[in-house]
Every structure is written in C-alpha cells, then in structure tokens.
Image (tube, rainbow, N blue to C red; front, side):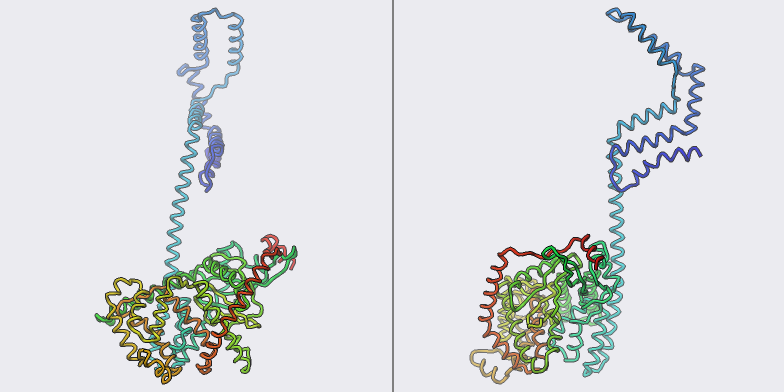
Length: 638
C-alpha cells in the first residue's frame, strides 16, 4: 500500500508524457519534484535511513564524529598554514557557529542522499530532457498521423468497394436492354433510366449530357433522360448534416432558420439545393432574408473516379470477349477518350473553383437587363450559400406556365436573349457556361435569364481557329480541313499528323454512308434548296458523330475541346427544348431575327453598364451578414 501511495507522485509526470501538448521546463521540473516527493515517503527509504544510522553508529561509514574531526583538522591546518595570524575572536565565533550547527543533526540516509544526487543530475539535464520529451511527443503524433492516414485510406477503399459494387451491379441492366424489342423505345428508356439511377452521380451526369443532345436519341429515350435535368435522387438528411459538420463544425439549424435537410428544393448529380432564411444587416437593422444553399454530395469525386474505372474495365474486358486486331486500337482510344471526358467533369466537383467562376460572372452580369447571376454570400469546400431567386423557375417550367398563345412570344424572346448571352460570353469574355442545360437556365417573370450552377466554365482562349475550322469543315463536308482541325484538337497532335490520310478516309466513309456531299460554290444553293431544313439538320447531326469516328484510328480529343462541344450542344439542347414539337423553320426564323437584334441589344447592355458603374461610384450602404453569435440571437428571437 505504501508503494501504491508513493507511485501517485508520478501521476503529474505520466500526464505530462501522455499529453498531446509539448512540455516546458517548468512543467517537467514540477512533475519530477512530485515524483521524488512520493519516493521520499516510501518506507524502504526510511529503512535505509535506519540502516545508515546503524552503520554510522558502528563507525563502519563516516559519521558525525568523523565529520567534526575532519572539519576541526581542516580548520587547524588552515590556521597553521595561514600567512597572516587569524584573530582569536574570529576563531571563537566560527566554533560557536559550528557547535550550534551540529547541535541538532539532521543526517540523511544513503537512499535519500542518492535520490538527492539523482535529482541534482536531472535538474542539470532538464533542458535536454524537455527536448527529448517533445521529440518523442512529435514522433508519437507523427506515428498517430501515419496510422490515421492509413486508416483513412482503408476507409476510402471500403467506400470505393461499395461504390464499385453498386455500379457493377447496375450494369446488369445491359442484358435486358439488348433483350428488349428494338422498336420498343419506351421500354428501353425505362431500363436506361433505372440503370442510370442505380449507377449513381457519374451516369446521371452522362445522362444529362445525352439529354442535351436529344437529336441523336429516340424521343422516348430523350424524354426519359431529360428527367435527370431536374429529378435526381436527393441526398439523405444524414449526408447533409455530415457536410455541415465537416465544413463548419455545426449542424445547419445552428446557422439557418427553416432549413430542412430532408426536403431539398432540387437535386442534381453533384449535390442538392435547399431553401432557408438568414439574418442580414441593412442600414443597422436586422433583416431576415431567404437564401439558397447548395450542398455537395459526399465522396462525389470517388463516384466519378470509380465510374471511370468501371467503364474502363468494361471496355478492356470487351477485348477478351471480342479479340480483333482492328477493334483493339478503337477500344484503347475509347478508353482514353473516356478518361479525358471524365477529367473535365472532375473540375466541377471543386466548390471553391465554382464559387470563383460564379463570382466572376456575377460581376459581369451586375448591370445587365438580359441575364443575371445570383449573388454568393459564402462558400466552403462542399457548401455554397447564394441569393434566393423569388420569381424564377427552370426553363421547362417557365414554358409550361405560358398559354399556347403566349408560348410563341416567349420562345422568340428567350432564344434571342440566350443566343445573345452565349455569343457575348464567347466573344467578349473568351469563356462560357459549360453546362447550360434547361435545368440551369432559370426564367424570371419579366423574361430575364438567371444562369445558375457555374461548376463548369469553358475557356475559349487559343481554341477559336480549331473550333471554327471544325464547324466550317463539318458543315461543308470538307474532310481535309476537318481532319486538320481534329488533329489540332487531339491529345497527341504530332503522331496523329502521320495518320492524316487514314483520318480523311474514315471521315469520307462516314459522310458517304450518311449521304452528305461536300458543299462547293457550284452546288451550295442546289443542296440547300433540295435538302432544306432537314438537310441542314442532318449535317448538324453529323457534326456530333464525326469525332467518334477518329477513335478507331487512335485519335483522342482533348478534354477542353470535348467540354466546349458539350457546352455548345447543352445550350443548343436548351434551345431545342423551347421548340419541342414546333417546326424547325420557326427556330431558324427566330435565330435570324435575334441576330438582327444583336446590335440594339448590345447598345442597351453597354448603356446599362455605364449607368450602373456610375451608380456604384456613389457611396451606399451595403447589406452585411450578421456574426454567428448575433445570428443565433436573431434566430432565437424569431
């Protein structure tokens, strides 16, 4: 029991060594003093004192008498050898002090004396001991960090296996798809939609791209995939709460009023959108405003990486089931093309980059009377908080709200404004929204465009020549110019130049099978007159398919050009949504009329910008977010 009580003195030292924080010299000194104090109280140390007294009494070790004799001898020797006589009064005073000093002796045992010597040595080395302790702490922290990192990757691997199992399981729908009646497009559409939902966000994004290019698909499948522009399975309440804990360390109800993580307003492939209210300061007064909160899905980057891997495995496995010397280069190029395509999607997963794009286009749209971008109030890695659009709805819903008589005017107005906005972005800012599908185009009651979801912005710098050559060559069916454009846009242009003749031959074969003849000065008017709108539409469809023909030759298009084409066709698909079921010539007429209105619209925009900058130059109160503490107080009062 005495040993247990004595070890309690080591508690401060153990706590010091076991804590995460670095130690100081004073902390170590106090902990060592406490440890030695506990040892001094141990009975064994007291027994060592009795043994020492016995040995001294027997004269077996130096004792008080021998010590006094030694001191007297040293004093006598000092007086005898002093070159000057020592005054007797000084000698008498010393011996008086000596007798008083030894009158109540407090001799320590050998154990206590040994501990005192150890403590003295430790005091001498305390600075070095502090350094050693802190180095050991740092090593332990590093080892713990290493262990945590290993366990984190193990958990990531476990999550990847769950994603992979779900995605591979979703591929089982391929068999019933091919088993379905080829003419039953409705049945095929349901199978595809079910596979997309089970596969997850990666295929949802692919379905959105496919729906934007609906001209290439049967109507039933196009309509089924178009649902994914607005109807995507929502995040769970637990996922939303976990995102807030990860980014802000608190649940959403601590930051917002009326935030319901179980009821999103809209869900997409990247995340879900929620409405809530938050207090702001305006002119010194608290104002409760509605806000929109976009929350990113958990492990969305892994969904895309694993999705790319599963598709790669499927493509590679086809080389086992269908080995052929001509098929292998095509499959290899297809796999590389999928990698390039997915790499562009991964850029959309960074909410910090999305917030930067969003803020940049918000400033450009600040004074526009044609298009608008909601203001961002704050953002983190997985959460973006922005302005609430009270009167805006998505493009399909805005069209459905109009009566048949109003729809014609609405079509003309929106196509003119959308085409003007896209062209101005491309020409003036050298970049454009990369995903203008119908769900990302909101329409206000006044017909103003509200563009949302800026995760993908495509730069046009350095791409104009290749893009223009490609579009012009595709429409004219000039395969030589088209091959040159495709080679410039490829990932390996230098080696692809050696295959130019092969690329041209493949393009010639594609155009011949589609019945598309090259346009020249001699046959231009005749081809346009005979083919009409359908002929132009057929040429437009060929533009979408020509890139895929280069894969059999191993030509892989760079991701920036792929996503530029995706951006253009997404915008074109939104325009097509406006004119679904309407004669194609109506769209052509409205585009021509809109082009004629461009100078007037540009003049109005320039005037609005100048007036807006003038107003901004004048000082005015700016609404500000209330601090988190004040935020909680305002919510409590509500």
